[in-house]
Length: 227
Image 1 (cartoon, rainbow, N blue to C red):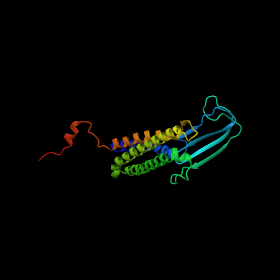
Image 2 (image 1 turned 30 degrees about the vertical axis):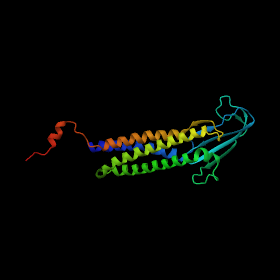
Image 3 (image 1 turned 180 degrees about the vertical axis):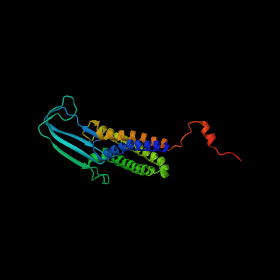
Image 4 (image 1 turned 90 degrees about the vertical axis):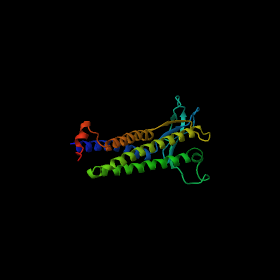
């Protein structure tokens, strides 16, 4: 009965952690971590907005016919505009990279992407250990599985913080046109993944701990008699 309860807890926690795994993959693979907007004060001009993730930057240029009264970005436009996505040139020289990548994004993007890849690596190791732990003879894999998921969650939140600093540096830079920003759904997925992976890892560690006797007399009764 006890083994069945433990197996049920492992399966339930694994389903919970699986949500964090999906959110991590979505966050790492999409480019909607932050939206960037210029502040425009006159109409009949070109407005350029952007959004980016760990791997690429997407920009949209539209001709603005009226200013947004709330200052939330491009106002009234006459056509959809020009949409373009470019991958960050992590390994190019400064002369070959764009000014945007040199001054605001390149170093941060490399760090955030590398840490995110490490998070995915820990996540894969944790998943592998969890699958092995379903066997009764290999349930000792629960402890490393929990540790791997905790490490994965910590890595993804560090990547989030690096990207947050990247956005801050980008907005503060005088060499970029974007002065307004907001974090988007990829950023939210990464934050949610951290919470789920961290809590799921701790839960697996608690499940892996040896069972404490409900009655202190159980320990005495189970002890072999002395000769």
